[in-house]
Length: 316
Figure 1 (tube, rainbow, N blue to C red):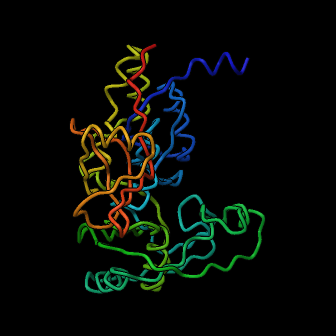
Figure 2: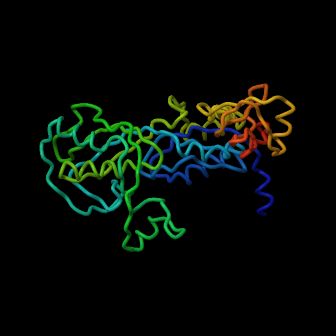
Figure 3: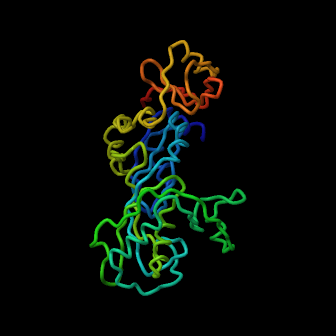
């Protein structure tokens, strides 16, 4: 029975820019679109919390071989910080730990606190996170009530800004609407938590939306609902939503090889090059098609690391 159901899946290569809905984990969203596309292999390029919405690049087939490269990419978010309440998860899904009064902060005070959290900083990740200790996610330990000490780690925050002077709202729920651009490993929940501590009132993330991930700065995102509608109308239309692997390699050092060299590269053979500086690169054939990822060592030897075995987009 399992073997029969397996036959409904197909080999498929490409990248889908998914607009993840609120309420689903990244893996739940991944599995939904994987089944819609009937792809036999899929992976995402960096988790979004269930509370969060926005860009979740999903890689199918051979594109999963570049997912690790996209994990370290620069990202941008818009978030709403709810002032005055600290939660155990640092977001609105957690249990309130304490509540404090919120002063009438002026813009200069807020901007100064934001500047202190910008640049290369030391950040303590949330206890409820997917970081692993002893092979187990921290959130699993936290749910059991275990005491967890997390060491701060260095992260890059390129921008942490108030979106408008009107974003400090009066009333029962004082909030700040903020824009964040950051590097790999940065937690927006931690930034908002630390901002709240700097202001003296505490804070948690009430809303979070990922806007872009390099190299997808102006993404055309697809919702699960729009993909379902396409699948119901004509399953073949879904494949037109995919980007080729090459789009995910924009910004990588590009190395074009001859057809003869490509044949050897495809077999995993090392190639000796002339006048090529050491470092990582993406390998392309003369037709501009990406064939893999490689590293050039100090001796000028091209060492294959990931070789792409492209599939044609399958049909039903």
